[in-house]
Length: 454
Image (cartoon, rainbow, N blue to C red):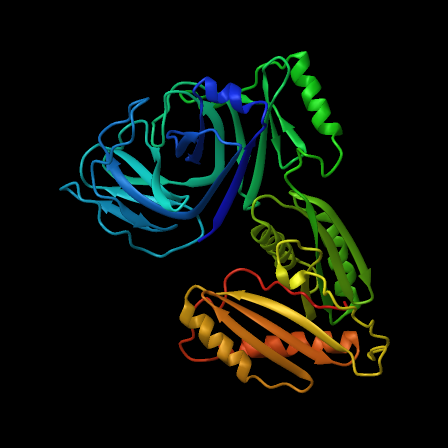
């Protein structure tokens, strides 16, 4: 189950204009490459947060009527990617079944009669309708595919759950297929025309969405709007309009052979993904590292995990010499939202050749955060780590809900201690995986490392 967040801010100069005109801030989510229902439509505020998860319910509806609110005609049943729910001959939606996968496709077997099919999804803490088919589906199999792209716009005379058919103006599309967090700022030019600013520094002209044609059109901007766009482009970093910042994430992998490292370094350079402000690759002998500048929005933690996931996708897709990892680390630097990363108030002696300046052995510390699907698995994993023994390395694992935070420490030179920590931790994970009937998957998400001294 993935989580997404969108933060929408309205410039203080635009707020009175929108509120006096009776506008609502609306958001819709794409299904089968089109929009059909206002997922949420509420009062326009200075700061507006939307948070949703990939949790769905399917139901049947008698009709699609523009301007009317969605009305379910059958019971709603939960459904996950890859599953099929059957609407039987009596109009009862049965529980979804089948193998869960990552295709994102939801299937309905309609054994009832021609009927519109709708979907609810989990937004801001509750299930809300976000899709109804414009036309009834006949008997047979129906495939629906929610897409993590949303449309944001202003409208009057609407509310959450309103079916849309007329053109929607002042709209902007926001893509979440690669990043779980985005931000928008809406400003008004001197002429009264609006401009959206994506992630603090990307001006986007509002579009008009035509539901029937499933198409967008962009009105020609006037001089005042172009001036506002130019001003946004030239705004200094960190100005009042900026809603994002960049946090470096350093991914490093050490190979058993230098040839594999050289090939992988070239592969990384050629496969820079979209969505990164920076992608700097470096290599020394058998080690390859890449410094990724991640653009953050409402959810810093999720953005960092997305960067880690993207890097690992590239690493595992690497088609060169089979990589034999001696070490793999992901280091997040300068994060503002994680107390683990706050600088210590006390001065820390700098290790020199594995010895602190006061003469005592240097200690290298690391932190790993592992996420599980259930609390029982997290508790067992924490106990497994706390019972693990390894020469020169110590562990302290704490389970909190679905997450386990692991504090690790080893003495010696930086390189030796860091490798010892990683190898010992990997051995503990392997031991847990070898336990009969251990929970699957062992962990979800990536392990985010903070190895001091690297």
